[in-house]
Figure 1: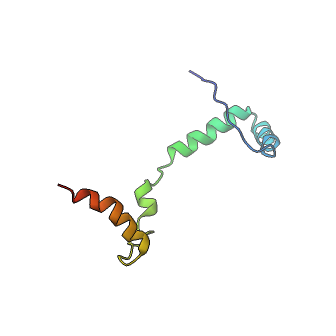
Figure 2: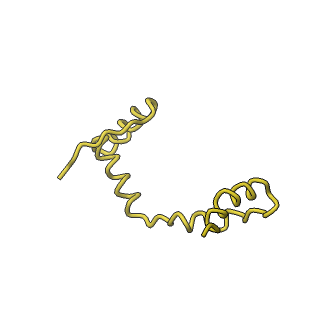
Figure 3: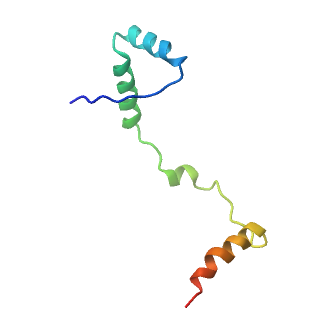
Length: 79
């Protein structure tokens, strides 16, 4: 069953999408649908795997760390 789905794109892309669709003999909606199906079929890496190794641990002498530690870790020390 088909369902209407409205998208917003840059005005410059509208004629490009129409031209691409026309060259393939399909509607712009079908063009978008095919692209989404292709993207959905590909195994996308998880958020964790994309970001693994990208962050450094905070230095304990960093004033931002100390402020967050005071705000959040002190809450856990209450009886």
